[in-house]
Length: 387
Image (cartoon, rainbow, N blue to C red):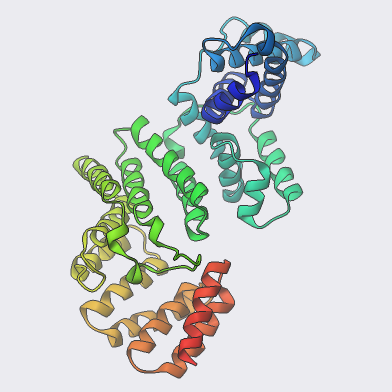
């Protein structure tokens, strides 16, 4: 007997985002595309056991879903004209362009940034609502409602790669990656990395797309060393560099080189260049901190952010000493008082200056602002060492 369920599961895991994208792009309605695709899956479960799995199962599902979507439109008085028009040009099998168009659609300006990220995870990456809700620490019902509202907002939208949305698309993909990276969710981080690489491959003339792919590749190269055997967070200075993925580092550096060759430096490229300095250094102390600080100076001219200035202060600590770095950090107090990394960075510098009581106080402040359990555990261990 044909294992229809197994074949369907395999094609769904590999092709669902592309199938969803090609249907949504043609229909102009993500919600309707998903409903039609689910109907096609149900029909496959009925027919494939007896008829056999088609040679091109993804194409079969898209064609069947397309037919069902047109049938649904014809049953609606307001949809008959649209159905007649759409029937003239049925969709082809999914392509990378369809997936790219879906990413750009998910970054529609009518959606808030959290909704853009959540919808990208759902529609483009194929994550279940339960998984996305867990990543955002909200009830599944809340996330389901957010996704429904986001899909409604896209009805009638143009599903195409619009240059004016590239900045939002890159930011969304970066947030997808960070959502997983910061919480040690390797699956989410890999989703963000895969999306960044697809964007870079499909938009080879966009230097910032290449820069983002390089940046995330370099970060992911050391992901395996970010937690120890007990599941505790390990920061960059303490990671075992012999376990970093050297092939992935080489790939990240190559991608950065391709971006730099386009001669249009941007924030993602500069961040990737900083990540490359860390990835290629033999140790934390042996990092070229002068080069790192210089890159942060360039980054500050493009994105004058206090968070970037805080990272620059860390480099200053190695170039000029912890006293000079602490002065830079304290100068950011008003703008970063509620940002968890400000007191954590300050605590590290205070330890180096021998001011342990003040360091403990700063660590308590960082602990109160921590956003996940791994960070809280690390800060509690630091506080125990100080007290």
